[in-house]
Length: 243
Length: 236
Image (cartoon, rainbow over the protein chains, first blue to last red):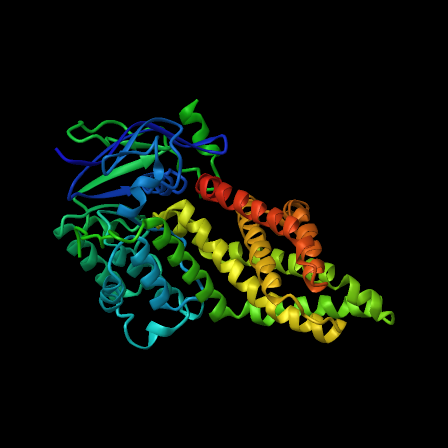
């Protein structure tokens, strides 16, 4: 089986706190895997690890065949991360941002135009500075940068947040197209009703661990609940899991 | 849409492609935001004017001290330009975008240094006119002065970007950067001032040792930046 993501006992520390506390996860090519769980469970950190932005302290972490314990930079041009932040330059126009993202990823400049057209940004918004966009338009532009990069692995963190109904439908269609074209998607969401329709598999993340993350592994019990953790800044609820 | 067909970079080394991309992006940000035009240039001219007030009415002192005052003003302005170069990466986690882009660390360094250097060269042209008008200095030795400006600016930009990325990840980066950069740039200030004095006095023979020092400084920090910027950006 062609595994795009393979993590074994992966631990990632944010300061001294284990944001990932021994994650086992397999994601096969073409899958759309939904990660869900309470705030502060480690979903965003897991996505950032897969993007090569967060270091793995111990364990194994392979993404798209690259060992991220060795060189985290090698994988970045092949993944697209839609995070809580837009990763956009406020002083550049929508078109400037997309052209830069496409060219940086080694894609043709035409990919930027295609992405703008797909997200409905090719009209008057094209030459508007990102700093002057509404929150929803900004989110669409952030999605467009991921589309323009043509990633093999899509990492989507709360992708529906900030989008109107049309935008949400459009995002679902784009994700479906990407998967149809051979991409793999790992998304984290609290909007289970919406995101479940996209996913081929759902996984619970709790206490910095993934429950039943390995392919073919029978369902087991969840790690100790961390429902008390309320956001990324509140890590006290998870400390006991690792201890 | 996927899987991707990557644009080939054959015939165009990735390092220079990435450097050009980053430099173009940074200069485009400055062109659209006009921070350099509306804030850095007026600041630099204001410093020149304040020096003139402080040392007036003896215009002889101003004329003799003009090279030093010019380069001190350039250094202060360079700190602002370097801070700005990293401030644009701080908005909405754009620094993560730069890391995610997959661009080569050396290419990012060269691109950011080139963008800062170009802005500083434009600023130096404006300041040269300011020095001529305010301090009554005759700008002789043009070719040598241009060489001095090129080498000093390369050294300032290269070292500034190295220390800029060190400070970028810290909450106190705005106040820490001048403390890191200004002492390091003391040799540039000394060499550029002495070389400029010799050039203005049309005694080029006295300038060459200082010009060589500027070249060595720029080379060392450019090589160091090419090697170290990528790992430093990872830690920022």
